[in-house]
Amino acid sequence: MDFEFSARTSDYLQRLGAFMDEHIYPNEERFYAQLGEGNRWEEPALLEELQHKARAARLWNLFLPDSPHGAGLSRSTAIRSVGSNWTNTRSGTAARRKRPLTAPP
Image (cartoon, rainbow, N blue to C red; front, side):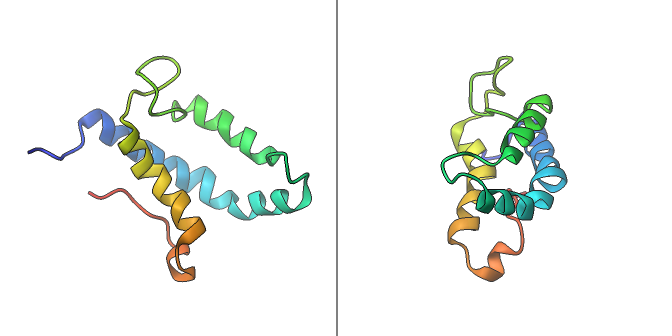
C-alpha cells in the first residue's frame, strides 16, 4: 500500500506549516493575552484576523470539497496537520509544548 501524500496534499501541508510558522506561533502570547482580557464568551479579535489571512492563503476549511470554499483534503490529513498541534497545546507536557508538531516526512 502506498501511504505517501499526493503532490497536492504535500503542497498544502508545506504551505500550512509555513503559515503556522509565520502567523500562528508568533501570535500565541497575543492570543492568550486577548483571551484573558476580553469577554470569556467571545473569541479574541486575533482569531478573526488570522482567519482572514488563512482564507486569503486558501488554507481555510481544508477538509471541505475541492471548491472556492475548501481544498478537498481528507479530514484525516487536515486533522493530522492541525489537530495534533491543537491537542499538543492542551495535553502535551511543558517540554513538548515548546516545540511545534510537524507532519511526518
